[in-house]
Structure formats: C-alpha cells, structure tokens
Length: 48
Image (cartoon, rainbow, N blue to C red):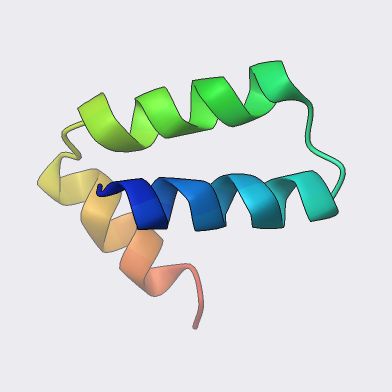
C-alpha cells in the first residue's frame, strides 16, 4: 500500500471509532497476510 492509501484507511477507520491498536493490527494483517485459495473463495462468496 502506498502512503495515500494507508492515510485514507486510517482516517476512515478513526471516523468509525477504531482504536489505534485495532487500526495497526488491521494494516499489518493487510500488508502481510497471504490468503489461501479457500479463504479467497469464502470471502468472494460471503456477499452472496
């Protein structure tokens, strides 16, 4: 993620009432997690 994307995510999550710790955990997850095919499929189908 670039600086603009991270800043926008932080701004929006703070508006939603997220704590600093929760935001940091979320960003670390997004930047480091490698989803499995099963996770991706479940995420794709969860909105249906």
